[in-house]
Image (cartoon, rainbow, N blue to C red; front, side, top):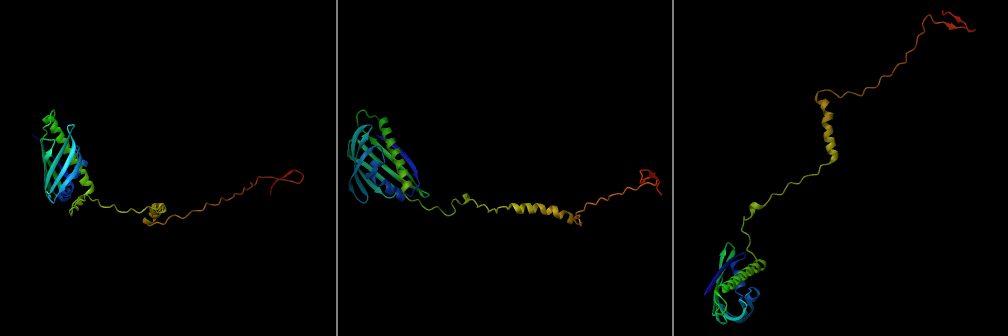
Length: 223
């Protein structure tokens, strides 16, 4: 008898995960072991399903009876089929709004040329594919519980204050104001604009020794 176990944390409530796993007739869409699953009988707490698939490459059939213990456990076992023995159990444990799913399988193939090591590999692949598919489907389709009050409050970032745009003209006037107010701070008024002095034209005075020219071209002494 070969026994293999695996587990996953599913981010969904335990009640919803149980509803998903309890649809054992849909296992052919979830695992890689069974190709078809036909529902034979259904009661409030029991299911009978006919599976067909391949075990280590060898075609097998398995009629299995499952007992539901909502929302924490599902037991199943083969009542008739190509395997010498096949049984398993799903265990669901709630953890702070999430669900820990464990799957335990025990099998004895009873098939020639199928060793215990080969059977272990088949069961391990069955468990990994089943749990991973359940996790993906549950987290994608099933609603999550609302987040608890105060959770994630530390990750909130305060909004930045709004910044008013700066007008260029206001900047120039602000820069020019201190320069104009500097003389007034010393108690002196700014100097008025000085006019350029007008240049006087100087007259040339004649000396007393200068001589005047006479009418006939001669010179006469100045008086």
